[in-house]
Length: 404
Image 1 (cartoon, helix red, strand yellow):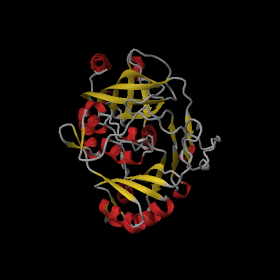
Image 2 (cartoon, rainbow, N blue to C red):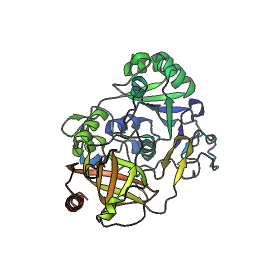
Image 3 (cartoon, helix red, strand yellow):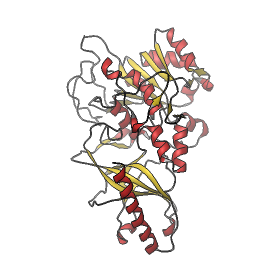
Image 4 (spheres, rainbow, N blue to C red):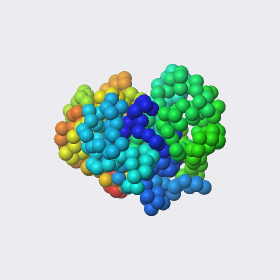
């Protein structure tokens, strides 16, 4: 997948899904689905995530098992040429392309559209409030999820005063028409854009039609017992420890992804060694407490680093259920919080892997939260903490075995 923060470096012409897409939940995936380059048979396939029905008057679940493009670049290197060159660019952050996976010519020799997600960086709320927006899916996770879905390009529009000042008409003309050469656009019906958020999805459809651009307005979606699928609802579920609700709306287990770093190594002194996971500072943390988790471990991977955006990207498709990967999963118990028993001051994320041992330092782990076990609490002694951890491990083992 090609990732760029410059419209001039974007692969064109495009088919664009437009929005913030924080979380890439089930509703967001319905917005992305219309711009994917798939056969009619693939586009008609429906995946029911987590055993829950996705209900709406329009829109379909995407086929999550289709193969994504093989190559991921950044805008520090030239994009692949229109003949599908597979040269090894300096900006490569995924496996080398095979054949013409990013060629601008389809099998009939006609210019095709690049399936492109266009979003904003930073999040507009962060720009206007001046406060960091805690994200369900920081950039590295968003890239991985989009690639798993089959998106070919991610364009991160720098949200600054200049962009915020564009009227709805100017945004369409300058960004979507002139720079991205969009021929198709997909947005949610509640999408707002342009100066003062004055433009609606219907306005977008009307303005774009003047340029011959088709705009799909994707309706809002409900899941399960009628909960509206939204990033806000997912945050509420995570903040209260209601993982069932949060994971249902996401269509997958909420994951904490980060590098294993050194800690105080207190866990090993009481018989429960833990991996201390360093998360991106903008990652939204769930309710402080103890969780049963499944942790992904890789086999024979090669770590790759995208220098321009300071994140590590290792394995596409590991966060989407039902897709192939080179991962195995190990059950574990995770603590999220400030560790009051040892007078911790800053939130930490630590995971103890059940029935597993090995060196994890420097590796990137993805811990999928399966069940909230208990709130964080302070114990009178390390012995009391040790007893509780053993009980947590026993409960987690039982819970995770039952949910296989």
